[in-house]
Image (tube, rainbow, N blue to C red; front, side, top):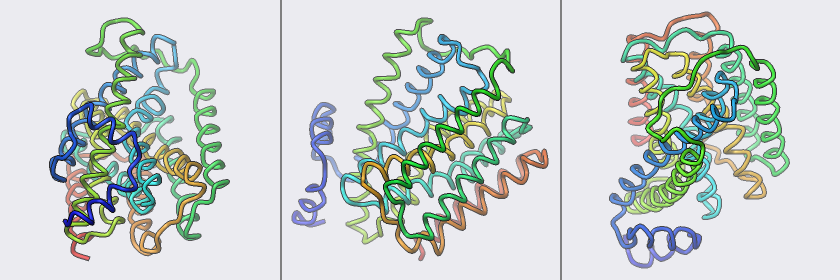
Length: 338
């Protein structure tokens, strides 16, 4: 990459990035190192946010059934939010949209598939069947906007209101229906420690998102890779690491419902929440035509297949999981080959 190209790439970056990276001493690093460090910060920050948020939820007596769908899902979706806002601020909406589409595909095919390889993703249950329908509804909304070629400002507001209505309904529906106890965390048993962990984790996520985006766009410029492909692959995989960590832990503890719940909740938030916020922040965002002709169909097919299995009480076992993981990497190869 020439010096002039790097200057152009850096011009769109906000002041938050420079100041934050100087605090970490990470200015002047090569693009691959920035991507690696960004991954590490995203994963570590996501863990802090999830652990802190879960403990806060239980200390405040939030219904346990909602923790996976709301607190944990929101926490693991923070990297997608950070990257989307950074991308909108830099004038690269393709990375924001591609990151969400790619993350939803990665969540279903790679994360849930890997969890199934370890045993089984488990029984859906009434609540999870309800949320699988929410994923399909959100995907249909996204399909409409992709077909329009944009998410207008008021469309973003409508998406955020729908997400709020969805959570309100879930809270009212599940209130008092579960007596599950909180899982142990590595945090001290007090709400102050949980709040501190959440704040520090959130800061690490934002800085990690900036580093990841800087390194990924640098690599894309060097190798001539379109922003849309960068979003669908590097960004999507990096921002799905928190979901992968939480889901694998749940699967190893034989809590298949929690694993699926985290994925479904994250995918709903990615569409209605992340793209909704990005649209509001950017005053509307344009959606590249290649998303309509290729990637939205991958999202629809993967979401539809998993939802069909959940609604029919089909177990997502190792064989299905292996097929999903292989399918994900085949999709990655196709993106780069094309």
